[in-house]
Length: 432
Length: 157
Image (cartoon, rainbow over all chains, first blue to last red; front, side, top):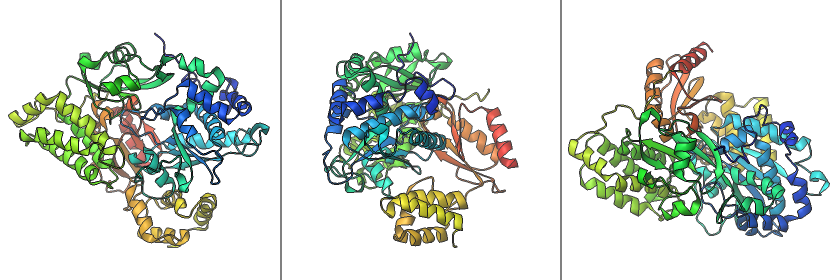
């Protein structure tokens, strides 16, 4: 079955990142329509579409937009979160590099809806190509009158600024992102107050993910009902799923929300490479609890994965084959979160460090049986006890791996070494 | 270490576009690092003075973000992704290969000062793993041949 391409329609076309290509394929036609509709009608339309945030949390976008006091005396900001850093997630980078004007059009419509005249696009420092392309796209939009003063004669003004990060996963967390734009360390803020009330420079601010904003022009052009008819009643629209890891055909696949994980892996990803079987799946980026091969029939939407104790997150699916050591997988992820913890909260700063340390000891054959329950206990103590969700993002995958693959941990400890016996993780033949 | 006229001009532009002087810091550090290759102490003091913010705040931010270098690095920096999707497709093998080829461990710089090898966390290239960022370019689906050709090029530069 082919993909259901809406956002990804033109990504394979040469020069798809140029404004000429975008306008030739019907781009920037949603903007005049939106300007005619008016802000409240846009928000209403987005609410009716059922669009939920594509950055991980799945919060309804229209409702988020309505939290801003539109007649605020302070400036209102929109921040586009292009800090894509979640392990297993690579969808936003494609939108930025291959079709950035879709996102820019969504930004203009979003800003008009929330009465914002300044938008920051926060792109991570590790995406220099994306930054170059966005810089050009922004310039093109100004030249054609889609940005700047009196956009398309509507009287609406908007400036878009590209802000380049400098290497910190935590800046994808919305309040850390605001701190970073303010020139500080990316340390998340306690909530309340929420950014919609007190955000960037103390002003009302909405933070939306790249893919979320990219959905908006399509909703305006084709209608909320059309968007809501895709997917399932509470999980509407298409989603760009990222398939990576031990899979034959890794890549991005745009499909309706709610497609089964099995279909995604076997039909689109063409199964497991090197003739192996599935052992585990990280279904929504590194922070999601892993699923076992038995859970493979699950529908890939926000609510079904939450019910299964995991999450859709960014829908970056990492597939782990049966030749892989799960202690090593847990260790790899714990290392990531230990590296990326901002260090503000004790449970996170110490917890991620201890998890990695204990997992390394077990992997290297120096573990003891009591470590297993200590790991589970440490994960429990990290969850829901910190300012942001990074500690949870470490605890959830580690806890699920320890609980679902406990036998592998026991085997390591009994044998006093890794039963898989591989010096290096994964397979690389290195040939062209 | 007074900055060049061009760099001062660039920083002034950044300040004029920023809401606060503090919020000019990260773009300014990017501009300074582009000129010097890293952020020597003297440069950070100069930045603090120009932006009129506490020197400790500059140090703090420069050491928080991994892409700011507070120690010298090679002319070229290799950021090899080590996170799960890349690891499953052989990032540790690639690290070993690179390390042997360059004669350095991760975190070190070649004796000729040409290349620094660093470990990166997820580069958003999971579908084309293993991947690495070299200066401003991303290299995906790494093979021995691709790595050999690249290193050859970097060494000559």
